[in-house]
Length: 196
Image (cartoon, rainbow, N blue to C red):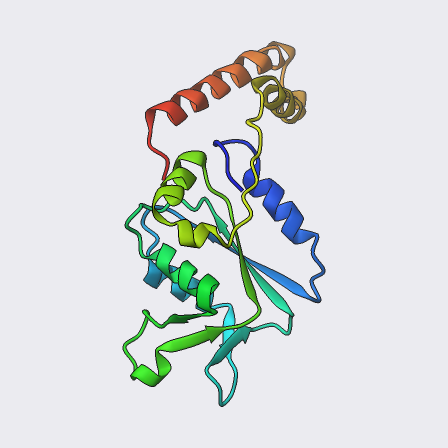
């Protein structure tokens, strides 16, 4: 799923994944950033798995049919090797253990019953499009419209007014001005700073 900041991608994906039957599915969320590499990603994803006795197969720790790995804000640099880890799993169903230095017989890990869902911003996915096409073959890409300022204002206004109910009327009257100032500041910050 891709789109701009503040569109509700994460909330939407969380809701969809939370509505899956917990008897059959479990979700593990990984918050990504530009510093996430293959080693740190593999360490986090492997923590949700257990090794099958006598085999080189890794399955979800809980007795569920499928583990959903939800990669939130997949904003990795073009050179990042975490893409290759994900691609290796998607293409072949295994990855090589990059976390520890063990014998070569234990290096390859077959990963069973795990799927990946991810959210990314368009600039990130355009980087993906140009450099990591083989990884994108495994994703269905969905877009989410940018939330209109009036919708954001309306939602935040209701929440904020509920908090101000115990304040004096002159302070309550400042609600709209404070919300507009916060939205303007957030917009300025999004335009001024590079996303992580």
